[in-house]
Length: 420
Image (cartoon, rainbow, N blue to C red):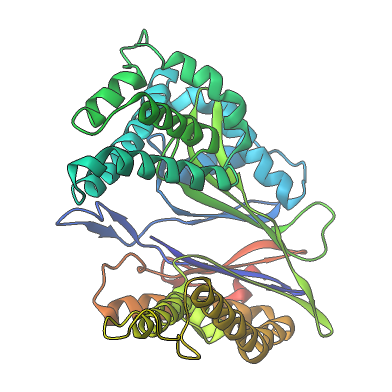
């Protein structure tokens, strides 16, 4: 995991990132290296940097290496910040065959679909084991059907995959030339001992199509996020544009384009605050809320109040006491609580933070960004958690006049006077 932060105003942008890279986090003995490069400056005349987090590799190649190779192809033509992001994606698609093969990408994509089938079969198995034999078929059908209804309600991660779905599924409808088994044989493998019928099989195949069309853990269940931050060709204020890349199928790099984040007017200046990746403690400092814990506490409170209503000692004919949530009312109370908390947080914490950032000198922005990453790291140490955030904290600044400048890189604090 990674923790990164972007702070920006009219003076420029400050970017900070930890340097920890943990391999085998799910194993008994994971290993953490503290020298990873996660900030990639673009050289003159470009006034930009690329940050990456989450998965270290894309189809076997380190993402940082791919970013550096793309940088070498840019030349001197300036673009918008979103244009740099789109240029990187185009470069990836054009160069996929230089470090991976179409056969490898096909297998990786198929294996991600097979993993999804296994997860679905496991969910069905867990549910049918808890019901009587006569109810097993209906339970299995409900599990798959409700999952499909949920997937249909989601926006696709990558609309291009929907256009490719017919061709992909046609290739996998029968055993392929490269030895890739048909998805129907994998249905038989994973669902062989579970309730089956034409209706259930139809829902399973619908699940497969929805997975492929929506890009739900397909063509990979891992993703890397790359954020481009700085100044575009005609931009006077810094902005950021991010993309989540989750594998490739055929010649297409699967991606989620995130909305650009712009420095917004604040008082007499502009400000931007963008935490990335592992950010719960940074969010807590900036907003006064630990949102996951707050949501969990709200859920527990509502469930406890609902439990008062469902007390078996109370006759179902008795009137429901005032103030005890029931059904949709409980959900409404939970949502209203979170809305009110968010408003109080914005008024008392986030807006003052944005106003402070708007007026800060660039050196102070850099100090603040590095300090907040250090707090995220320290909190993991205090909790005794796996050190997925750590190592040296790299900090840099980006300005209109000078482009990217390191403030601290791998423990070496740079004196601004060195440039003179």
